[in-house]
Amino acid sequence: MSPPLWTVDAMAAAMRAARAGALPAAVDGISIDSRSIAPGEAYFAIKGDTHDGHAFVASALANGAGVAVVAQDKRHDMPADASLLVVPDVLAALCDLAAAARARSAGKIIAVTGSAGKTSSKEALRLALSRDGETHASVASFNNHWGVPLSLARLPQGARYGVFEIGMNHAGEITPLVQLVRPHIAVITTVAAAHLEFFNSVTEIAEAKAEIFLGLEAGGTAVLNTDHDYVHVLFAEAREARVETIVTYGYDAEAEYRIGASETAGSRTFARVTHGKETYDLNLGVRGRHMIANAASTTTLTPSIQSSCGSSTATIWPVSRPNLFADRPGYNARNSTPSPRPNGISTPMIDERSRARTPSTPITRAAIRDPRIDPITTLKPTSSANDAPAKDSSLIPCTAKVRSRIITKTPIRPPINPSNAPAMIEFCSSASSSP
Image (tube, rainbow, N blue to C red):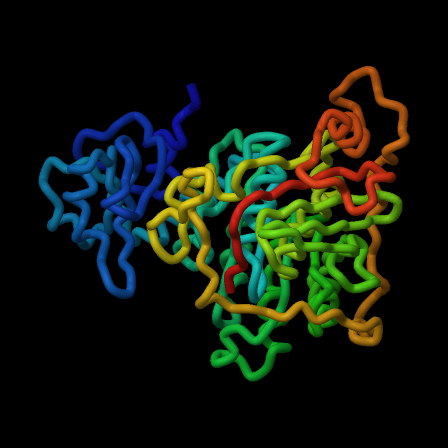
């Protein structure tokens, strides 16, 4: 049986909350929606732009909430016998709880931002890492001033990995969120003219995205997609933030994890990523050049986690799931109607029609030349696939584990060049990027 997410004592201490009514010993989850709250969860009465969650406290408790977190100035509106934790400000209390969740976690934390591709990349990272241990990730596109602390407060204490999406539409918005998350690895998927109405130039957007470096843990890693014209800005900002290690991926010839040959067959896309002598084959159940780039970010994780977090057994490949979002009940960015599949299984789908789109524009070497930039820092590759396997399986290098496991795997489609027996990474679903 899994331990509870939070004891009420720990919640009250983290939020400096006063207690009222009969309180449970612990809660199994956290919600801000009285309609979908599960029995035993804590309900946070967040005040939004349109609705005030305090109007739904009675409904949340009636639907099974174990306790409601309410503002002190709204206490008089609550039932006298309601189970409450009373705080000065509910959103601030949620942030305090999120900070406590991060402080108690020994897991490896990844933050993802970018003008497009955040949600798809986050989900691909979640699936990849879940092969190596319990992985918690933001649901849907919970990436703003309440979505990030909510997602972080839901981080189980024993999770091995946490993946958090961070968004913005104004300068300065990422900084407090990433300083709350404090990631070991920061991923920037791309920079484009999204939310340009709030900026004077795309360069300013790049600088705002680079705020993610300001919360990176000491010795952390920045993972950058090179397929846009502002990567030099990100490099400069990373150096100014004293980021020690930068890893690049993309279609550009200078990318350390380079996306090479690709092909499409029906609704599937196949691509190869090379890193030195290592190769990874991507098998995606969705069409799109941008989706290849989103999935390619996962290939950087093995050495990045070793470098930033000291992990030597991050056996995250191969990834094989019937659907990229199939284990996220109710996951649907635009509507709640599951999309029918030919086999009769209903699968949630992200509708990207109104989301930001970014052309994958390869950059030239000149585009990343800047007097403020040091040469690209290159991570040492993981152990060679030809290394002799260790007797203790827990000590087998990542790539050796990949090769030993791939022998028994029959890919849906043969690799583009099967002679090298590359690791297969399989994401089988409809998915898309988000702004």
